Length: 188
Image (cartoon, rainbow, N blue to C red; front, side, top):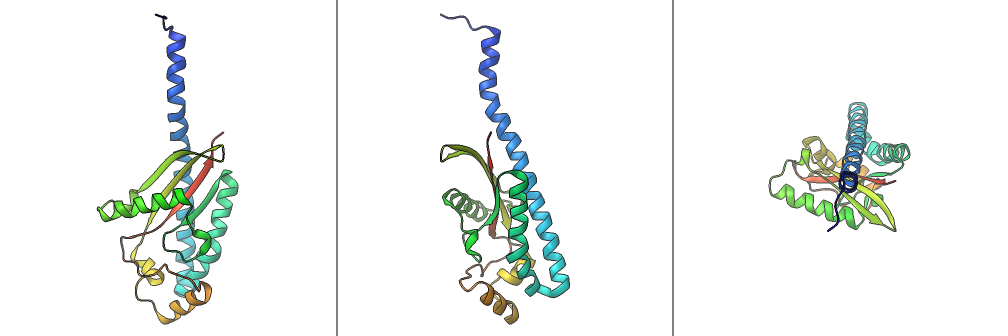
């Protein structure tokens, strides 16, 4: 029987702890990106609602949200966006990993989970590259129903129909999962 030296024991410990440490670091980074995205977008939406009401807010979601995501993607070296199972913007279509997480979020919501705390992170390999993937649920708040509820003001419905002719992101109730922020960070 081979004797395990202190060096070998430390080496084995490092091999198991390194992935956990990398996971924790990437999760913290992803959560920070999501917080920045959510806070920035919320501020833009609030300003638009004050300046021009919900029709102006539609412009924020269609123009400013992708710009915020693009800037966060560039700054992080990853890929940042919003996704949903009920699309308004076709560019928000989830990939298979995101779809599975969104379905999981819906199951959790149906079971009474706190959507504010609902997130999921995982290390994955795609195309031979390792990534840390993270998603954070976007709960539907009362204010969201102005543009995503079952009953929309005529001017809001008209603006949405014009901007998004294939929109199916309507009919939500407060407390449902509207979608999620999605972050994909390469592992070095």
